[in-house]
Image 1: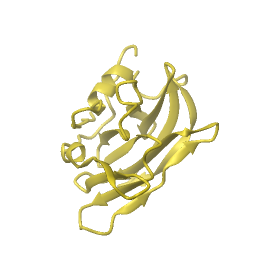
Image 2: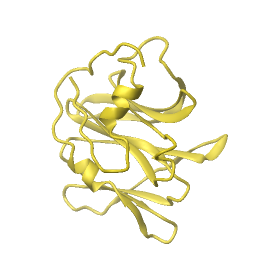
Image 3: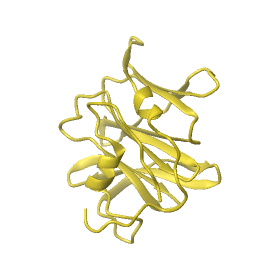
Length: 181
């Protein structure tokens, strides 16, 4: 069973997103329209992908590990003014960090254990509407230290350190099946 640990006031927690938006594991007809794959890869031997989706009129990112839905990050009216609305979803030996980015954000930096130079993350835009931007990346548990959103002048708009620090460990296995939305 996956555990999703997240925190940080003012943002919707990944657990709340799972219970509010998730409809269970993968199925032939998901409860949302997939627009495109944001990122995909293999980390710690697990195949993962994050997709950009429309769910109930909202733009969301949907995280999947081995085709199982493990979380959603949806931009709701209460978070539309935030620089980032992101989820931290765990599954076995893998943490997926994904979400939506406001137009105020010029760059995103991922900081991990080891104090290496921050890695600049790609910010993708919806071709039909460049104001809708999103990102995703995967790390092994315990490696993610911070996610920093900066404006065009390099000023820090937001740090995701507190939310990432709440991620503990994850158990093996698929997420629980849920009935309904």
